[in-house]
Length: 303
Picture 1 (cartoon, rainbow, N blue to C red):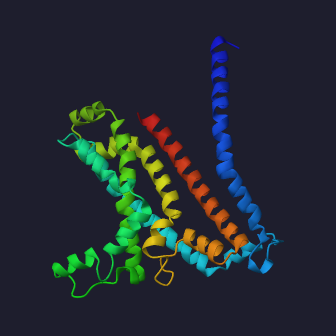
Picture 2 (tube, helix red, strand yellow; picture 1 turned 180 degrees about the vertical axis):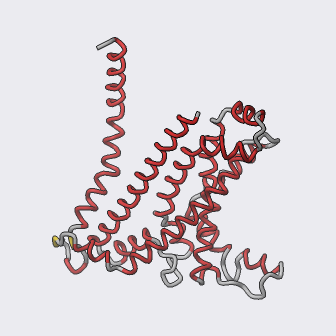
Picture 3 (cartoon, rainbow, N blue to C red; picture 1 turned 90 degrees about the vertical axis):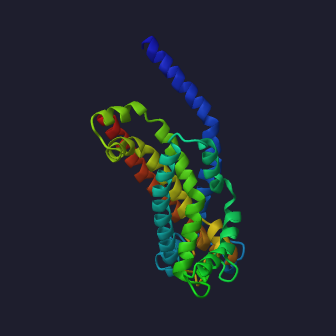
């Protein structure tokens, strides 16, 4: 073994020693609760079983297959997540491109842009619930003043409009998060690449498509990954604004799990719902990681 290999092995050993406390903490915070939830999902534990759980194997998972309310909440979560993430990605990209330019007051604009993301989600949900209120809401008041409507619209009482209101509120709050991540990626791209591309006669759109997008793809995928996990597991915004209504039209998976465990006290089935949701998120992480590694490899070959 050469001296360089010895130093490298020592550095790796030191790195693992430093990582052990963090790994132990992650095991207690994440691994144990998920393992406990999986174990509990194999039992029937509700008010009917009193305090003693009854082993039922995969019965809870079989029950989930025929649970129409679960699949409806799953579809609602998928629609909400897809619409929110796509809109936030496009808006976040545009905001990041603007904030990456030099203009007077840029620092103030950057600080102001992240304020919605810094505010508590429950507070934001309450504010938007009042904004979309059919009698006293600002939205109806503006539309009435502009003559676009004759009577107030019951935004949170209509299934489609309630979903649109939730998506609008979520986009308003979390777009700054994506813009911050993308802005960090934009600032890591050397301006020499754009100057050389412009000398070759490339237009701004060509520079964006051939330089910015490929080099920014890792940040894009990381942003999508984080937002997918957050949007799919959203609870507080929906609970405050609509409570899952009207008629369960905006009930997402997390809200259904909460009702199953806390309202109906069906702990075994609720644990099965948690496990399935966790596995879906892990699948999304695996796909995003694969795409991230693939984009990095492609960018390395291209550059």
